[in-house]
Length: 129
Image 1 (cartoon, rainbow, N blue to C red):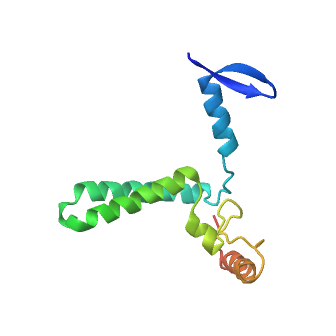
Image 2 (cartoon, one colour):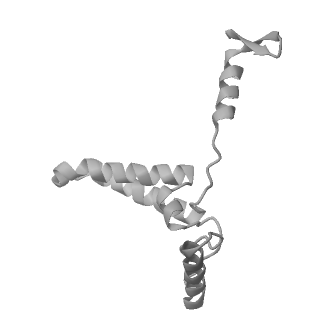
Protein backbone atom coordinates (compact mmCIF):
# COMPACT_ATOMS: atom_id res chain seq x y z
CA UNK A 1 0.00 0.00 0.00
CA UNK A 2 1.37 3.44 -0.84
CA UNK A 3 1.74 6.14 1.76
CA UNK A 4 1.17 9.86 1.72
CA UNK A 5 2.69 12.55 3.87
CA UNK A 6 0.20 14.31 6.14
CA UNK A 7 1.25 17.37 8.11
CA UNK A 8 -0.13 17.32 11.66
CA UNK A 9 0.82 20.45 13.56
CA UNK A 10 4.58 20.93 13.01
CA UNK A 11 5.25 17.22 12.43
CA UNK A 12 4.99 15.24 9.26
CA UNK A 13 3.28 11.90 9.58
CA UNK A 14 3.18 9.06 7.08
CA UNK A 15 -0.29 7.64 6.57
CA UNK A 16 -1.73 5.21 4.08
CA UNK A 17 -3.38 6.92 1.11
CA UNK A 18 -6.65 5.26 1.95
CA UNK A 19 -6.66 7.01 5.34
CA UNK A 20 -6.14 10.40 3.72
CA UNK A 21 -8.96 9.82 1.26
CA UNK A 22 -11.44 8.66 3.89
CA UNK A 23 -10.49 11.62 6.09
CA UNK A 24 -11.27 14.03 3.26
CA UNK A 25 -14.57 12.30 2.58
CA UNK A 26 -15.53 12.53 6.26
CA UNK A 27 -14.83 16.27 6.23
CA UNK A 28 -16.98 16.82 3.14
CA UNK A 29 -19.84 14.56 4.16
CA UNK A 30 -23.16 16.38 4.34
CA UNK A 31 -25.84 15.30 6.70
CA UNK A 32 -28.94 15.21 4.53
CA UNK A 33 -32.15 14.80 6.45
CA UNK A 34 -33.97 11.67 5.33
CA UNK A 35 -37.59 12.29 4.34
CA UNK A 36 -38.49 9.04 2.56
CA UNK A 37 -39.94 6.41 4.89
CA UNK A 38 -39.64 2.63 4.53
CA UNK A 39 -43.04 2.15 2.86
CA UNK A 40 -42.40 4.95 0.38
CA UNK A 41 -38.90 3.55 -0.21
CA UNK A 42 -40.31 0.17 -1.19
CA UNK A 43 -42.90 1.84 -3.42
CA UNK A 44 -40.25 3.98 -5.15
CA UNK A 45 -37.98 0.98 -5.78
CA UNK A 46 -40.82 -1.06 -7.30
CA UNK A 47 -42.15 1.79 -9.46
CA UNK A 48 -38.63 2.75 -10.57
CA UNK A 49 -37.80 -0.84 -11.47
CA UNK A 50 -41.04 -1.19 -13.43
CA UNK A 51 -40.27 2.04 -15.31
CA UNK A 52 -36.75 0.85 -16.19
CA UNK A 53 -38.05 -2.52 -17.38
CA UNK A 54 -40.74 -0.75 -19.41
CA UNK A 55 -38.18 1.59 -20.96
CA UNK A 56 -35.96 -1.35 -21.88
CA UNK A 57 -38.63 -3.67 -23.24
CA UNK A 58 -41.31 -1.50 -24.86
CA UNK A 59 -40.21 -0.67 -28.41
CA UNK A 60 -43.33 1.38 -29.23
CA UNK A 61 -42.32 4.14 -26.82
CA UNK A 62 -39.49 5.21 -29.17
CA UNK A 63 -38.55 8.78 -28.16
CA UNK A 64 -40.15 8.54 -24.73
CA UNK A 65 -38.01 5.63 -23.53
CA UNK A 66 -35.23 7.87 -22.25
CA UNK A 67 -37.71 9.94 -20.22
CA UNK A 68 -39.28 6.85 -18.67
CA UNK A 69 -35.83 5.46 -17.90
CA UNK A 70 -34.68 8.73 -16.31
CA UNK A 71 -37.83 8.87 -14.18
CA UNK A 72 -37.25 5.28 -13.05
CA UNK A 73 -33.62 6.01 -12.17
CA UNK A 74 -34.66 9.10 -10.19
CA UNK A 75 -37.16 7.05 -8.20
CA UNK A 76 -34.57 4.39 -7.41
CA UNK A 77 -31.96 7.03 -6.47
CA UNK A 78 -34.34 8.79 -4.07
CA UNK A 79 -35.30 5.44 -2.56
CA UNK A 80 -31.68 4.42 -1.97
CA UNK A 81 -30.64 7.77 -0.47
CA UNK A 82 -33.98 8.13 1.36
CA UNK A 83 -34.00 11.84 0.44
CA UNK A 84 -36.36 13.45 -2.06
CA UNK A 85 -36.05 17.16 -2.92
CA UNK A 86 -39.73 17.29 -3.90
CA UNK A 87 -40.72 15.99 -0.47
CA UNK A 88 -38.53 18.67 1.09
CA UNK A 89 -40.20 21.44 -0.91
CA UNK A 90 -43.73 20.27 -0.10
CA UNK A 91 -42.99 19.54 3.56
CA UNK A 92 -43.52 15.78 3.36
CA UNK A 93 -41.60 13.68 5.88
CA UNK A 94 -42.63 10.03 5.70
CA UNK A 95 -40.10 8.88 8.29
CA UNK A 96 -42.51 9.96 11.04
CA UNK A 97 -46.16 9.19 11.65
CA UNK A 98 -48.33 6.40 10.38
CA UNK A 99 -50.28 8.30 7.70
CA UNK A 100 -49.93 7.46 4.01
CA UNK A 101 -48.28 10.85 3.48
CA UNK A 102 -46.99 12.50 6.65
CA UNK A 103 -46.58 16.24 6.41
CA UNK A 104 -43.93 17.84 8.60
CA UNK A 105 -45.99 19.89 11.04
CA UNK A 106 -42.91 21.32 12.77
CA UNK A 107 -42.37 23.72 9.87
CA UNK A 108 -43.05 27.36 10.57
CA UNK A 109 -45.71 29.39 8.84
CA UNK A 110 -48.19 28.28 6.22
CA UNK A 111 -46.64 24.89 5.38
CA UNK A 112 -46.62 23.84 9.04
CA UNK A 113 -50.28 24.76 9.59
CA UNK A 114 -51.39 23.05 6.40
CA UNK A 115 -49.27 19.98 7.22
CA UNK A 116 -50.81 19.66 10.67
CA UNK A 117 -54.34 19.92 9.25
CA UNK A 118 -53.64 17.37 6.53
CA UNK A 119 -52.20 14.88 9.07
CA UNK A 120 -55.29 15.32 11.28
CA UNK A 121 -57.55 14.83 8.25
CA UNK A 122 -55.79 11.59 7.28
CA UNK A 123 -56.14 10.25 10.82
CA UNK A 124 -59.82 11.20 10.92
CA UNK A 125 -60.67 9.35 7.71
CA UNK A 126 -58.51 6.35 8.63
CA UNK A 127 -55.81 6.77 5.99
CA UNK A 128 -53.11 5.22 8.16
CA UNK A 129 -50.75 2.28 7.80
